[in-house]
Image (cartoon, rainbow, N blue to C red; front, side, top):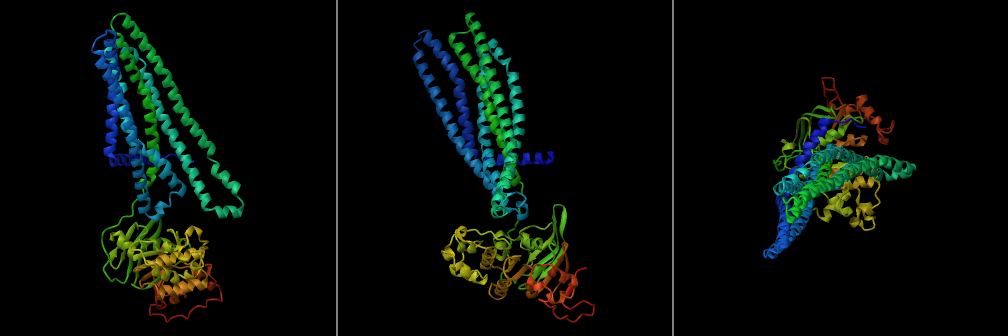
Length: 605
């Protein structure tokens, strides 16, 4: 079990409260209307006992004024009913608007943060935070407004009791301290129980989505029963916390329900004695009993309090998304016609307290292809993400054509910097739409097909049941075909910098060679940054950047670096037939420069 983190919980609570206040401001007019209708309904409820009591006294005395006062009774009761209905209707609208605002805000932060920050939250947990928990949190603004107004009848009823008869009021007041203790204990215990219940919900949702994503692996391994048991393992704990939560609520409600009638019986007894003594009229006794009932209605505040407690606790869960750091952007534009020169100056990246890139200095000339090579964990993908502004660096600067990437406008950045990944996600209603997906104007069908040809995807797309109009969900795609569609999407939106992060890993050697040739000669000219595991990709590159433990060990041409046995070992360990002994003879050694290093190699000391 994760140990408690008081500082983190306090920070989450503050973030959740700030978000709830912002949601309330988003629907400030409607929330004010809810509060106004609720207050007006409470005022009508407070006026009703006095009007009824006075009318009863008039009718008992056969006073002619009894008729008009009867009409007043009908008007007050009608107003109370209509105002209560308006409060419910407006409150539902505020709940919906607040929930929608919380979801949009959380989703916006999730999509605007760096991918590695978003990846800290499992998909199942994110789904639960954006659906069930956001719904519960969204009811807080209206619940606070109506809860505050619902205090008026009990407080007003108590004041009215004192005005009608002090002794009757004192008899009722004697039981209120016990009621206050019940409500305080309820707020404390229910908050902790609801928090544990929601935490178990998140864990189960995360396991379920994880199993759905790996359904083929589970089926192949024959572990469906084991996975079912793993997903449902927290169910007993969920049941215990759920039962505990309802026991707390039920116990508080039961005690309150038992206490309130006792208080009313006391009021009836004392009121009857005062009536027999001539200190109260019949109408006064009726009003006293009605006001005692309103004052006893403080127990009904339990329901409002429960809603606020559940909502605030749910907001703390959703607040984990509110606090995601936003990947900041500026408003600058790139100089027109730039070649795409990429420069990294002292770039440093920290993940989980560990430095994964150490003060990287790198210059990739515009229009050149640079291959990032190195053993697994050397920092290739992190450097590619920093170079394409998918993540921010913790130190240093990344420039494209002399402009810092963090100062570029989002439109300029995504128009000129493209990405392709090893496991691309495909968005769109059809295969053609998945290739066209991206920022900027919608590409024409001819451009989509041209990009597919460049990525060697056109032949298999044409064989699909509806060609480029085939829904992605109905297209039986292999890993290599999915990668080729991801490459086609990148080629379709190619700008002055294209970052390929292991984007040909699932392709066979022949297809990978076709894609690399198309990238060099057919795709819009620009700078290429390629995370390379294949020997052929490094050999075709204009510049090789050799990473080792987060540092640039050397840069140069593949032919020059090949003389270093440690460099050759990087490819000997790779799963590439071209790297097998006897399949890729070492290129001839270039002449050495006077410093003793092979020409074309820049060692980074």
